[in-house]
Image (cartoon, rainbow, N blue to C red; front, side, top):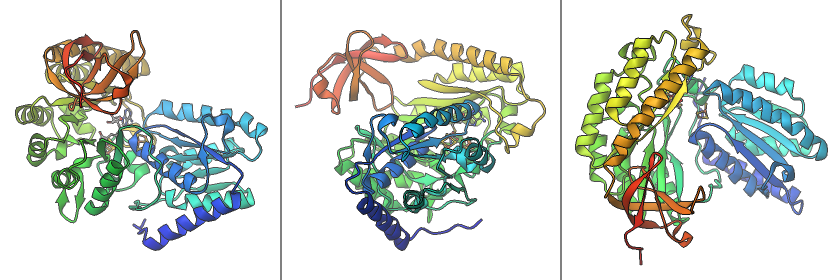
Length: 468
Ligand code: SAH
Ligand code: SF4
Ligand code: F3S
């Protein structure tokens, strides 16, 4: 497996191919529809696929029914994603019968698992195109070939991955967007498929990141989340993540809010905590997946920190960063997890006081170390622990939220919530959601609010004064 480089010449060829497709299909009014599963990595890849399709002359379809190309960008981090994808792909058969020129493509992490990809390709003969996570740069040539020759294409290659710059991007509209700073993962947590389907860690050049942040700010986005499987292991020629954060913050003063995700506890340095504390437009929120509250399980997971290390980080963050909030990911039912291990997780959740947490039942992923273990936990036990953990979590929210009564801060108004009386909603810098009465013309602007009470795991309040 070699690291290949995507150079200027490759980019030129990509763009020329897309322009050629545009010329050939001009006037046909072709439409695309992309359905994305999984995390922001996939969301962002879909934005690149959309960018390429737009350059090739396609416009966005509102529904699958009016599309000339449908792409499923798949995830395989947990099992139900797989079932759903196979089901959804199956449904397209009817649309293919109605529209014979419809192209159906399936890509993303699940297709990088070659066996699964082959199974899908042979089970569904009406799938025209299957490609893995390392093939984005080949999308233009595959599309051209499909349009010219109508022959099915299967392209999944092993690779450590590369950094591709310059492909067109069609960003989801809104006020907040994502900028990738690194790709892949080297951590090989024993339950996780991501390193197998996303390749090794590779960081983008700081100049390219700063340029992209400037561009999205010029396009009107107020908030950027720097994205990576493990952002704090960012390293480009010795430049570390906290240094990059400072660089982006200082080089793009017009950017209103800067977030980052995901941070691995083993790489959370004092330098990063200091940067979070000092840089006023860096948001006071950190997503810090703990996965388990049992040292024994953390070790089996290959997470490379103990609960004591983790609690020390929480303490340091709270001491240094005013009003900081933490969110996390937790897995229950990892092979061999005892009732005692599980109780330790509940205990950790109680003592941290998370703003929110994504909780998952362990799902064995073929090819990972944990999946081969013999001490798998029965499904009913996993489900039952998941329910109990969620109840513990929910019981911690009121105490965490109560301190906000009377709190004042700015929210970036994202939209109107119509459950009950229409209310504007938006997040504080630390990710807490606040609901307020107000006019929908405020969507997209920063509004100072004061918190009056609690609403589910969120807050409600009123606008203190509107911006001029
Ligand atoms: N890179 C990030 C997130 C990767 S996937 C990190 O390290 O935190 C997002 C979350 O999915 C993980 O944090 C984990 O909690 C969950 N997850 C990953 N593999 C899983 C599996 N096999 N079963 C259940 N949950 C899993
Ligand atoms: Fe998966 Fe662990 Fe890498 Fe996160 S850090 S993507 S959980 S292997
Ligand atoms: Fe899923 Fe791939 Fe993300 S497996 S969680 S889409 S990196």
